[in-house]
Image 1: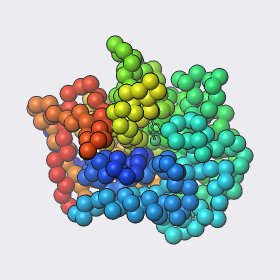
Image 2: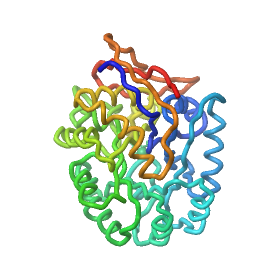
Image 3: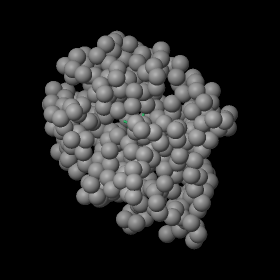
Image 4: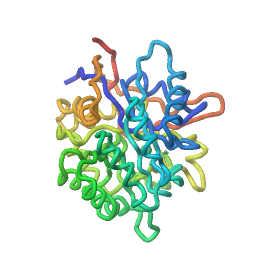
Length: 349
Ligand code: DOR
Ligand code: ZN
């Protein structure tokens, strides 16, 4: 197959940052995706409904007038989150998810949750309104090996939350392990998972190939090839509980190439071509649309995008951007280390 037309995709996990960096990276998502769930871990974080409103206005003001892109807002859950404010944000249609960062688990997560017993009232609000709790699923315990943190979180924290709030919609974000896949398989359909593009491509060897490769460092960290293969299998299987959340997470080249480099991989510009490549390799191009454009919207109860996009395959490799830049900002674009032949052709009604 050299051409495929799919409903316009959504990205259910996206970091847009703010200020100049927002302006630089936003077009790369807005030109290709209809909607995206915007992560709230900017500085300071998006904790209240008012914060989310202001941040959404900043995003909208960075869009070209002809671009039809809908940023969907999430709130950053803290131990002091006001459940009444969360309820207000949900009722007025602004708040589409609440994000649980275990404190210290990842970039700008220091305001996150340490004691999971403090968030019960907010979880009740989310259960009542059927609004998802999006979870960064890594245990924060220096004793636990970094490669085991997701599996341990699933066992120690997520299972009890699910048991105590059985009606709560939970999305285990950017999963990287067979254990996380199994968790979703063994729970009812109010529990789902997002999968990134990069975790379908890299395993942990990529981070150390010939030296240390900061541009492949993200959290959760890529795992063994065994896990990557299971991720590819489930992503391309057509199972509606697994859908795309790119976790495209731009940091400047300087912040990545550092003695203490930031976690995050900027995949937005290449996300759809790389996915087409992966699904084609699995002989599953017919499953691509579900993963990118249908399952996530259905889980969130959001409308499917009305337009379609065409992906076409060229005989020659398509030259990809290696970085995007503006003034003094430079951000490296994910390099999957294989030739990409697919490109997004056009949009038609
Ligand atoms: O790699 C990551 N980058 N993982 C996260 O959880 C956060 C993200 C970021 O904000 O940079
Ligand atoms: Zn993220």
